[in-house]
Length: 407
Image 1: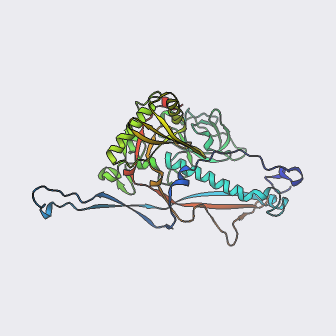
Image 2: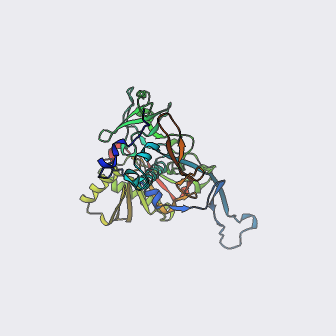
Image 3: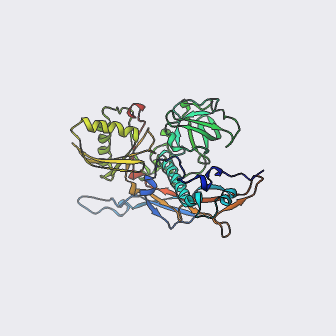
């Protein structure tokens, strides 16, 4: 029996055209635009916060020495997290297609780069949504189906975890993706096997799909930074309790009363309230594409708001508008969850970590060979090591958005 080859259909004499593949949306706005600190290679990363500056004022006389307030500096810390990515190429494909300049292997560098972009997308999703890639919009089925709100964030063959608030995680491989209905079909093996029973995972218990391992280790998310545990975030950050320090508390507002017809008035009213409380430090509002659709409809019909500038990029678009209360920038991101809106500035986010997506070397080779009965396999591993760092007081969040504001 011949050794297994994944690309046997791509013989040179039959393949005059480039490989046809799915085109995936690029969702790397966060990682591409945030600040980078490439000096950190491990150990404890210190995150200092100025809780209070000098504040003693007194009319008519000097303050007594024991009345003079001291500056209060709080030291938070984080540790390095690791996201690993792996690529497999079979030796039979290398042998069949000749050297790296021939046929299919000509595009291998592009395939590695494309995989890195996919990893960046997942990092961006995790930063905005926390320990999930997508939320379930329907209960899971015994036949292995789970319907999600962002099916475009997944790939066939991807190993994922399904979990909800009262059921332990179920692990499986995506066998198929229906982009139109949002249904993922999950099996217990990459090939063959049986459908994973997902009937215990319900929307009532916040069923969701996440990257394997993200339940115990993941990069810091903006959801954890801005929201309390009761609202789906965290009550502590960088090893410190949020309620004990004003500098660790983001501004929060409920969007439960927002409507599709008044979304722009509702959003800008909250935006200017935030700026009043925190000194006009908020530069952008990040919304999901579904929310942005309703904002666009309001801009077309409501002449009280004027559009100043529009921009678009991979997986995002933005608009600068001016209204009765001033100017604001709204950025729509494909990876944004539908239930929150973040208010802040992408330049106030830092990813700390040296050598992003560094390929691991095995001796002098980038490939690690695994020998099997169906032929040797070459596996390339790469890692993103580090963590996101941002200060809670520089962010605001509008939570509990109703489904009616998502077009």
